[in-house]
Length: 114
Length: 173
Image (cartoon, rainbow over the protein chains, first blue to last red):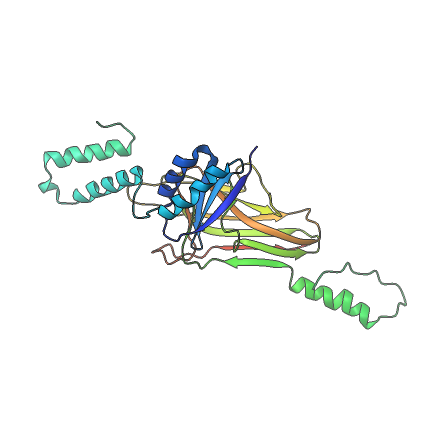
């Protein structure tokens, strides 16, 4: 069974979920994950990683933009914005608002909504 | 001050200063100040991980060193954690590089997320470690998550999450 090695880089501004996705796209299942703390990013990879794969890591970490969101984070932000938009007196709710609420509830319950 | 196995005193034996100092004074001092490693987080940023395998939380600070006399050691940790997408977070400790509990570690929990926010979950354990030889030992805190991102609040000024975890190890016998 392969062990893990840890590669550390200076970078205090990180969106961990996004950086994980960016590194996973390059390294596949050789990425175990990333950790942050003490102003560093630590990338945990299988010790079977090749030099060519290892060389991909630092440019990805340096190019990482912590302000960007993953698709999931964007969806969560969109849902939160929709919820906020519905915080208004019931008397002012339109049919569209009610549809939006049903859609949000369905998404929360894991029911696919087209 | 290291512990010395107390000598057996004989009838009519002359009490010497050296023996009294070694077997009484020094041993009392050793009991008063047992080998201890301790760290309390007060960091500039909280810790996060996306790792699905156990990795060090902080291989520099949440890494303790104790020189023991071969007795049992208590290790303790407490913290508050959260998860970005409803998932599990597990903790373990390594002693000299070997995980104590193995498998999914010594403690874990499911951290849910709801539309109303990200609940905090408290993680705490105290564990008796036996069978350690006399000498220097390193104790490191490790964690993993089932996916997405786990966060450990580390006194970094986060609103309502400016919490200070503690990790310690002490020889107790």
